Length: 451
Length: 101
Image 1 (spheres, helix red, strand yellow):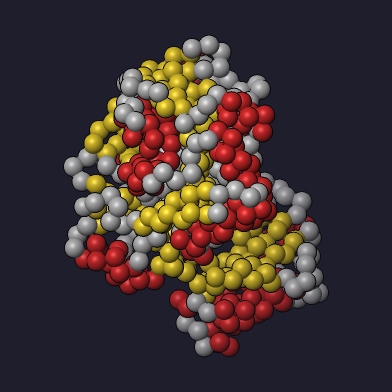
Image 2: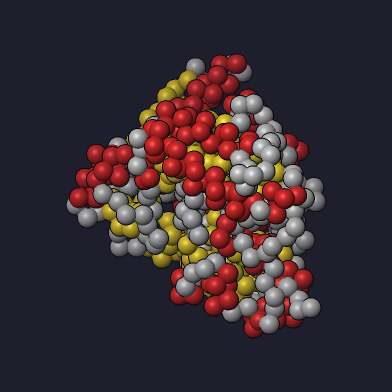
């Protein structure tokens, strides 16, 4: 049996300390936590930075390093620093060494890097070893070269290699959410379907149970199945909460693709052992012929500034669409004429908050708002162009009249200046898998002895 | 007035399933509500709601959970300048406000 302690769905989300202590007391074989996701958007991967505060990360990570020392077992984190890019891994390694130094601990740290050079990916692309998933953006050598970061999602094999070094702490770059949990059970001969399925159920911590914010759960893996036990007060796993977790952020609730194969839970059976624990059997692992890893890439999509103005005058609230359309036409013409830009060199958009800012063209409800916000979004390839166009848009959003005959109106700017620079913006540009001959060929493993 | 889907079910949730997919989980809450949703919400209607073709949608009717699930390529790829909802959670409202046949 292999017992995996999962403190939380992600480092930075917090965890219940009492429940964590219960977990340590129950003699886990490993502590595993996820460090990231693409869910906050492309900027983090594009810049190679973490979404969470350094101070919060350090406090929560220090708690887990202490838990690891007490339990005397390895601690593994996947997708370090939100995006799992090499720089984000280095950031967490630095925090780790600070913690070890401040608490007078020695530890062996295995660092697994998932960053891919554009050259490696371009070579794989030109030799037909990159396959698009649906729906995939079109790519070519130029798109690949334009990525500021490309990562490959490591699977259980790469995490196993890191654990085999005998490391106390494994800090991994981008991995699948499940790999950090599945790796040790697989190494120790657990049922492969159960290892991946239990990992998927456990990857968001207590989200598979009641009291989902409490974080801490145990997953026990053996030769036939797995058992989920949430550890916080008021947290209960039921066959319903556990099986329903397969829906979460999965486009297919029965099939999950991983490096080297896929998990099929169509035949899985979920059984309550008592009012807190659930036992799952019947999950199937289907190995694939090719070993592929998924790629994620982000590239700069330009620079952006935003402006916000507020319409409270009833007449303007009622005619906001016409007002925005008129401003867009006039401001675009002005930007083209005064900056010598072509229409395709920049993008200008006004979103009416209170009407359709969330759903855009999909919005099918009309309402009578008291006030409306108008969010101006300026995007272009250079910082200077964005700055200039945003400044040209500013007076329109402040004073533009619906008709030439009326007295000049003034709208509400919530701050000065009304333009807010967002700087460089990024976009995801890969939804592809890359075929490998050896699981380690695209990853780098380094062992550091600290103290 | 006809019931909306949201009136009949426990919860409608939408989330990203990676940067390129959106997934919508309709938790019906009872076998009776599940049956009503299964019959009253066609894939065609959901596709129209998202101004897309029905063959682009995946649909899962899961009686063991009383859940009907739809997955579709995101209306806009997450985080592009055309995207309006980074986490995709607001699309649930569009589905919850459908009238039930």
